[in-house]
Length: 492
Image (tube, rainbow, N blue to C red):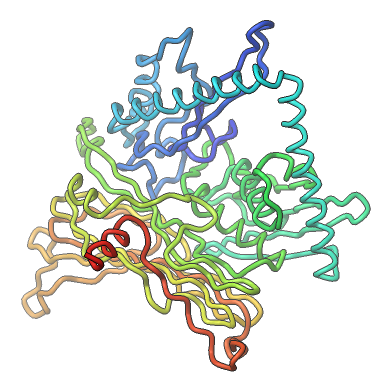
């Protein structure tokens, strides 16, 4: 079991379980199975373990370089409690895991998933033989490597140059800079991030493993062939990351936002260099809320944490519109049903839908972001960790930028907060809390989250169909269980 960003991890809530596969005859390790899951709370200074205000890794929860969670078939519950509850609470202001029973259950599910993988691998080896299985593993990697080499040659031909450059910025102004130099003889490339900003005091520092993940994702996404994602995609690439930059942070740097936000900007920079598409929302809009942890007297109070990521608009490209209300590049999660959320947590959802007009205009339109507004029915610590609140997702080739996101606290006035003033309107206050904030919301307060849209592609006036008419912005069509139910009721 491991989650350390300096042992191949991404950020602390992402816990990886690794299981060896032994040869039944020689007892040698022949494969590994692994599963990684994001856990809703692993301790730290705030519920949800994604604190927008963290400045070092100790404030973000339990860090585990390596822990043998299962030994001789026995799950080490005592050791898990020590790592997840006792050790994080030793740091001033931090708490241990607020819902260890949930985390323990999820980790057991990961262990079981790994074991299922072991069973399937052994079944395949029994049917085809170890040599054949391993050869096919190498074939898959070699095919991916060759596919990326072909892509690099196509890019040189299309761009008319073997050097590609791009730069984009985080909301705080930190640059992420990339220079790609393609060697046509070896069909390989150097990805040099020299010129990227230094480590930041906040939590947008990105571990090296996340940088490589963003690069391999981009290469696979730009391939016009159907291959499984694997390490072969990185073989032709030499990724160079400057030391002491936010892409190679020190051991104690805060990193929880690097995996979910900075990674998005790295993807934006790579795709921009390759002139592949306009920027997507560039954010995962990380929302956490909950209760518990250490109180003002330093006493641990039982509680819970909730975490969700919120969709936005994807960028348009040469020949396609962006998609509205989707996760882009990372997360790839489905948000929970509103009915379940309201049943299990002290919140009421006021609105959740698309944010019309937030996608950038162009020959091809960027996708729209979403609006998500909820009210708390009980005092809660609410936190938001987001980007693209001061810098818009870029358009390409004359396409317009997507709209920036915005987080608004609709706060009820209270005597105890001293914001009830006799000569002022007594309606709720609308407070822009910025991209990264944590607030103690009282009963009746609401949070309105407006996520960014995607950038457009091409000059808007060029967007004509075959009949000379303006292209229509794509309309989202309802699908899934609710749409099926509505259709059934209509036809009844």
